[in-house]
Length: 570
Ligand SMILES: Nc1nc2c(c(=O)[nH]1)N[C@H]1C(S)=C(S)[C@@H](COP(=O)(O)O)O[C@H]1N2
Ligand SMILES: [Mo]
Picture 1 (tube, rainbow, N blue to C red):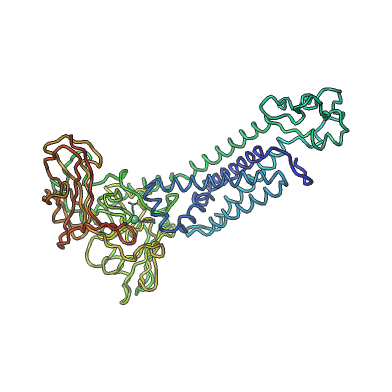
Picture 2 (cartoon, rainbow, N blue to C red):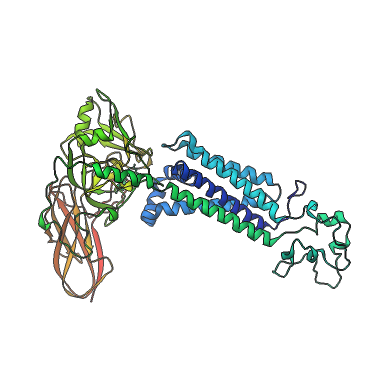
């Protein structure tokens, strides 16, 4: 064991390795404890969540742009790399005094516990995974140091071999791996022929001090392997335990009792889907539907104890259970969701058939007081949306949705209940895992994205996108089908035009739709001459507005500009 006087003489890299392994054990065990209790109480997830909420908006936009839906994976990987470096540092300072490393581990455990305890959806037991992890990490740290260090003279045989001329480095039967032909410079070997005194020739007290210092690589490697194994099994087990098996079961149960719609969606006309290869289908399958949220683990909400509280500026606060909600007349509606972060031509848009209770009716039961202009909806994980009251009450199909495309709401899309409001970007309307609606005023409350640089109001801007051909495709010359989607939710698309190389705008054919709240496919056949061609699209909505060519980035209230692609015509 390393001594407080003078500390350990373990090579720094070995100490760093021990630190990393101890850190891995700490995280693995914490993950296991979180898996057994609450998956989002894992210190990495909790710290990650805290980082997400505190990330400057510009950095978050950059991350979404560059990593897309992998942004969460990149964040978690980044946290793990930083933690590994810190753990290595803790290992190195543990050479001086193991207490330093222990203290460092404890501090990081407290950071993890603090983050877990202060997440919006956390409970008092959420500090446990971090603390249990720290305990396991500290134990691993001291065990590994003790394991590989043998400069503890208590470990030495009573009469240590004093055979003259034989190096003590090679005669200890307990430590056969210690011979130095592994590239480790032998501290006793010197360039000259002058032999330095061998440890065995020295007085015992000196042997015990410097040159008898032994460091057992084999014990290090086996210790590291066991530590990594423990960390891996615990961490992986924790992930499996924490996975959404509760939610899967709950979803299957709900599926058995999901009521039929009292009001069916308007049928989708035959011509709504042109069925062209690479063209976004009219209905986006759930598995392909984009996902955007701040949750690092998908919140798991039990519908049997879920309630929706409606309070604030209301005559009569209401608390609905899931059964209460299902007993209301449910209606179906086809609505295209769009993310405000979707850049021109971007992928964060999808169309689905939703089934749910009318939000306006539920609010009417509570009685909205005059002066209220905002619905601050709150998710299980603390995320909030601010939705204008007048938009929700104007008769459009604003829903508390329980199903998506004929299937119980997928966990990632808000199970058991989410909001869907046609015409508003998701960040101001589409609260997943909703548990609460506070009826309030925009001048009194702020939703999640507002202090992060996004506009409090988020009506969807009219947009169009070319899906076929793809940007950069090589296409044969002659007649070519160009096709895509356009959306102006709750207004409706009335025209789409296409332009080649800045020439005249030609009107595309619009596919049929069953209402103004979905995107609309379009197509046009053009003759493309050989060479590099730029194809541009613009849409006009039913209010008569034609998309501006002026580019604006997504922040603060949605991108504008024409989508253009380049193709090589051969
Ligand atoms: N609880 C919660 N709901 C949320 C969000 C979130 O971060 N947390 N993101 C919103 C945003 S920005 C969008 S665009 C939509 C996306 O819904 P989807 O993931 O089902 O496509 O969800 C909205 N609802
Ligand atoms: Mo969004």
